[in-house]
Image (cartoon, rainbow, N blue to C red):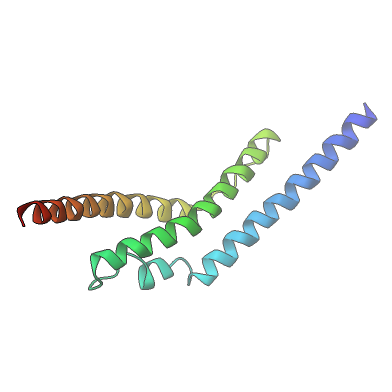
Amino acid sequence: MVKERGMKTRLVFALTKFLLRLSDCFERWYCTSGNGQLLFRRGPNIQGIPPQEASERLTIFQTRFDDLWRKFGTYSGGEELFGLSKTEYPALHKIKKELNLLSKLYTLYNAVSCRKIAVYIKST
């Protein structure tokens, strides 16, 4: 019984360290991105940039965000496993939603562009 309690204490301690790391990672990413505004200032949804450039920016942002989202999922699973209250990051969910919508938009744009090029090549 004492051995089990010691193991549980160590596991909760390890989880707490992981959660602090997640929080730190998110805060660094969030602050580095200007409180999430980097996406809106230099991201793929800036008005006036060419669609191809926006598509490339989306790929870069999506890659960085996917790493953060993976960590969030891992640590959230740990919270659930140990019965801790789930830490919510509303900004993280908002950014995920916006990146998903942008991804759909630029996937459509890229498909239309490729089709347009194929039709042009075929007609020449």
